[in-house]
Structures are given as C-alpha cells and as structure tokens.
Image (cartoon, rainbow, N blue to C red; front, side):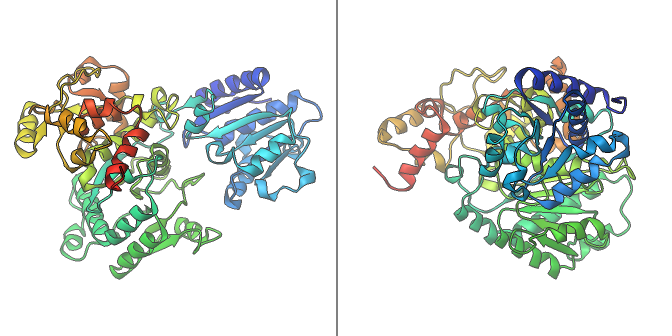
Length: 523
C-alpha cells in the first residue's frame, strides 16, 4: 500500500485513526476544509480493505447528490493510486438512496459531515443493521460529536495556513439597525422566525451598508487606485467590479429582497434555496459562469462546497452560532492555485445595538482556526471558552468613558489582567427582573462608575489577517499579552448586567428565562 502521497499531518491522522478503529471501533476526524479529509479517509478505507478479507466499506455522503458525486470523483483521483479491486469494495451513497437489502454487511462505515446527520433516523437505522462495523466520522466542526463524548483527531486551519494549503482572510463587521434582542434568540444562537422578519425589513439598508464596507475594504487594500473605483463610488454602488461573492441569508424572504435590490443596481446574481433551486443548479451555474458575481443562499453552499476562486463571503444570517459562522467563512479560505496571492474577505452582519456581543461571537468563531479551541468546544460550553480581545488603551478608555454611561459592579474577576471589568448600563439592565425584581434593582443600583478595561475590537482584522492576529496569542507571546486579554461570554454578560445578576443564574438559559418573564409580563 502506497501512502507516500500523504502530507505529514495527513499521515499522522492516518496512523492515529487506524489505531483508534482497531482499539475502539470508531474514530472522529475533525479536519478543517482544504486539509484533505476525503483524501485521507479513502486511504484509511484502503488500509481497512487490505487488512480485512471479505469486507465492504460504505461511505455515507450527506443527503445531496452533488456531495455524492464529489466522493465518486475523488475515489478516481490518480494521486490516491487505488486499484480497481479496492474501488469495487467501496460503496458511495446517500442514506435515502440505499434499499434495505443494501444496508447490511459493511465492516467499515464512513459518515461524511458527521456533525450534521449522524443522529438522523436514516443513518442510525443503517448503523443498527451493522452492529459490528467500525465507524469513521468525518467533520470540519466536531462540537456535536465532542458533546457526545468523542475525542476528535483535529487538524485545524492553524496547521495548514502556513504550509500554503489554506488561505488566510480579512474580516469585517457590518451593523444592522434591525432590533434583534439577544434574549429572544434560539439557544443555538440562531434567529427565531420573528427575528428573521426584522432582517427582511432592514435588508435594503443592510445591503447598502454592506456594499459601502466592501468598497472601503477594496480601496484600502489596493496599493494603487483601482481604475474604475471613482466611477463606482460616484455612481450607484455595485458589486460588478468585484470577484465572486456569496451572501448567506437567514430566510428566503430576505434573500428575495436582497436579490431584487442587487438586480435593480445592475448586479448579475443568482439565488439558491430549498424552494427555488431544488437540485442546486444555480450553485453550479455560479461556479461556472464568470459573469455571475453574486450567489445568494439559504442553508446552501456550506457542506462540501469547493470554490477556490471565491473571494467574498457575507454572513447576513444574523446568527451567533459559532459552528455556522465558522462553516461560512471557511468557504472562502480555499486557495486559488491560479492566483495564490488573492485576498479573501468575510463580512459579518451584527445588530447595531448588540455590537459588543456580536464581535465576541465573531472573534470566538475565528478561534475555531486553532486546535486548542476547536478540539474542546462542544457547542454548549462557550461560557468557559476563553476568547482573545484587545485591551482598551488610555486614549480609547477616555473616549469610551466620555461617550458611554458606564457603571461598575463589584466583581471578583478571574480573567487575566481584567480586574475592574465594567457593566454597560442600557435598556436590557432594567428588563432583567424576575420574581426577586427589587433585589435585582438593588444589585444594579449599588454599582459605581468606572471605565472599562477591555474592548472587543474586530477592526484589527481589517489590515491584518485573522490568522496573523491570533497566532501569537495562541503561542503565548508575552509581548502580545500586553495588548490582549482573555474574555468569556460570561464576562460580557457581567459587564452588561452586573456580576450579582449573572451569578444569580446558573446558566444563560436561566438568565434568558428571567428576561423573558419580564418581557412577556409574566409573574
């Protein structure tokens, strides 16, 4: 068996996975996009077939034929050097494509996008029919599997960016005036149906603000003025001069409104969602037709999407779900081999009234590029996961103190270099009233004024790429730590509501329940 084509980190994953399959009958590969997850898993399948007589391997692709076809294409990759005999023993299918008689007799089952559909009824039924089979789980976002007790073999972006297998990216945050209350969000961080309607109403203004941000970024990134830049800025903003862009929308109504706006402005674009593009034909057309600049999607173009010449990804979903944000920006990080110096951009839409928390979630999602974070995050433990933020300089501290009404609760902060953290006084503070409302008001009224000592700053990614900002932090550089501090989402809530308020509730679920009681007028 020839494994000489495996990169060093792929060889390491290959050996660890084989050991785990032999000893535990299962293994999880938590490999980031562009790391060769499909390639490596097929070499693992080959090893299994060579060392097990009369065996069969089943590869379960996610429930889209386009992903199934990608597997079939990869299995014939000449670099793999798989013999015809090996290929005949590997069956590739989607769960709904298997008939009952074809679901049994597999000694190894490989589940692609395992985080997304391992628990699906169709997948579980196949696993139950193969009780002795070894299971290889493949995922780029292993949080749900970590929650189930698995310990993934992780290859994070930090490993492959320096080796040139993945592009770095610039990050921007664009504000929306939509009044999206944090307390009303789903516990996953995604928006409710009612909140999605708010983004539909603000879609035009949000798109205008987005175009302005993209052009500002384009202009700032160029050493020489772009020939048509003055013309673009003078006329109606248009994405026509930019490269390929994907805009992820929260719902079909938002997509349609943005689509209509862009069409009126002369932008060549397409939309893809479950009701209007059943077979994802528009995604293929977007990839193949150079004249189509923008693709608008709802829950599309994330799983297994491969487009190296993609330049911009825009997240207009409003989500605070770390996994979803990571999956979106990872789409734009594939290396364009025809233009390896091509700059890549990710823009995130955040409620203007919730900017600090929104920036925290954006920073947290960027930490998913590092093994230390992605190997521990289980989707539910963000309260305990530290995220790096920039400290407030004396000048910025003074400006912040002058511009904002700030109150300081007595805190016993366990965050390094973050004593005297503050609480921002706003409307949410008054809304935090439960059955012990008077005590809660007392907690708040006992606060004293003091400026905050740290700030969540996403602007630092505008001129320096995300990886280059975060790498020194994860390498524990003392010089960098003079400018940065650790923060958890719990610290954000303490600063917003006060430590006494936050400590009264054991979890964000309890805190939101208290807020909901007041908002809904319940006793």
